[in-house]
Length: 288
Image 1 (cartoon, rainbow, N blue to C red):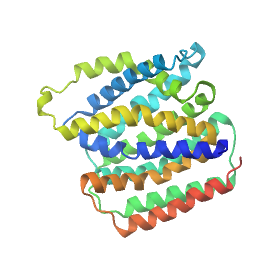
Image 2 (image 1 turned 90 degrees about the vertical axis):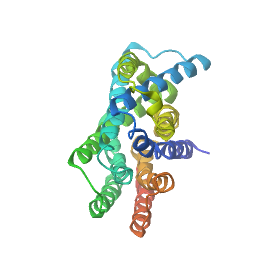
Image 3 (image 1 turned 90 degrees about the horizontal axis):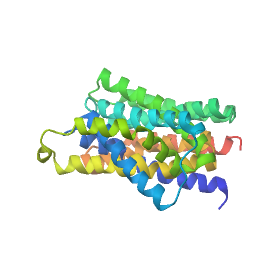
């Protein structure tokens, strides 16, 4: 397989892993606070990162990379997990995953800013159409919504796009494992202290499903998924591979149906088909 194909494959694995994040968070937030979920998942993922760095004898990032890693940490270690956990106290998992359809656009915008490479007019046209389809779909759904939930999800998408794009640029230099590990280690001292002071008063009162959701977002969403995702973005290009996330809302809806017994209707299927067409369009027309 060529570099582009590897990029799409790794990116797709990352998207599949990430597609369960909001459902896992939705389950966890029923018994755990957003602050604990955010800090706890970051702490656990950082410990896994230390183990991996030692096992693979990876060199620590240089001081020159600190600012870039800090941006990644703000975007994907702290910002996105915290804002989505807040949002999921007010809106359903099905409603929240639709916002993820806008993430490829924010990632591509920040990617263009960082790399100074414009993928072309056709790419932007298909990206905007895909984002518009997702937005129209969300607007037509009869969800019980909240202003706080919607604003939190919108903020999460913007800050996550920033972290994804900066991390992808840095991955070309350091590698995906070092990027997410470096970001986690930067955040570890603060996150560990916050997690310690926000432990649930009664650990036994937390349901097994909440712990399971927390475990998923701590290991897969916060660490393993990023290794594949950043590698895919670096191999295939930020603007193009990021469009795979247009599929993530509908993968997330499938998880919501399986795990939370939410219904998948015909509008979801039609929308998924149209968005898939947009992903194909961005791939075909993007400048290599």
